[in-house]
Image (tube, rainbow, N blue to C red; front, side, top):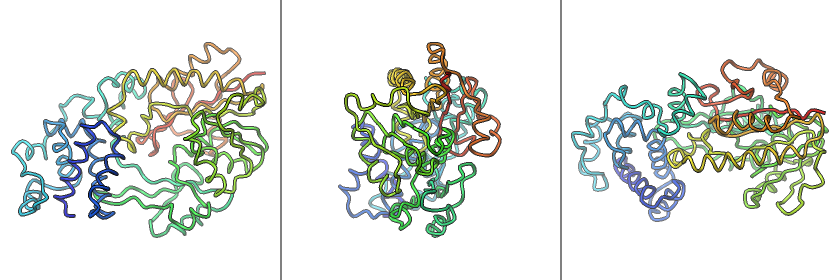
Length: 429
């Protein structure tokens, strides 16, 4: 497929998302099934157009004077991918699969100045979230929002139980991997421009042998900050597919015991194969059922709560969720988080550590949750994240990561990671 056909396909996919209210991944998959002539490169390019359009939906709509699928895709082509009205006109001419010719308004949108557009549009965030983002980032909130519109890198975590970063990078040399800037066992493959394809590293021999896992550097950092050590008893209360369980097992050198639990059985399903491939021997999976964790009450050195959240920290990877988020969904997640903090506290022994993690950048899900928990639970105290960072990552805590409530917040703007929050609470004797 040539560029005009890819643009037309991206417009079709976005229209499907808009009219049928289905996830982008499902719409792209459905388009691929119905258009089997399209090769892998075509599907990747169409996916890039769709995701780029959603990442900058508000700012592109401000430039184009419309948020229609056509306007957004044309904006990506001209404002992100380097095409011009003239180059598109030449490409469209004589191509039976091309969209209709550009209008004068669309041509003007290619170079429109949006510096006077509403702040939420320049930050590419929903208007109703502006007060929350201002509270989280102060005067930097627009820059923080704009940084969420870039393409994310592909980050990997070396499995220290089986390999070294050097060994993994040698195996993946064809993709030009680089060490991550903060996570000591991290490797990153930067995102490419325009129609660049994300490497499928899971077909690599090293992945099949358990040398590495796909995991954002931010997720690696908060797993390290949990401070899990050899010989400890650790409960991963919201283990999901097991990404942090695997990281904890490597940090503990396969010694001690990790109990991996998740209330959603389907989310937990992939963990079994991943544990086997990574040769993890100190993790015990607890399937959700009545009394599954009763024997752990009051016995854990650490309880890790990777809480369900709005996912605002993952907007680069899932930009469609940015525009679907509602105050009602935020309130639901807050209720779930508050309940999980109380539940997690039951399993700690005196002196134990509660590790609260979200992939959110909103204070309502982060500092506010901890503040409310501490107000209702006098037997807990916040641990100094400056000390925790230095002890686990052997560097000083970078400026700007500490939150007013005593946690840390990672963001694409500050750490070139997904957005993550981490707070450590100690249960006093």
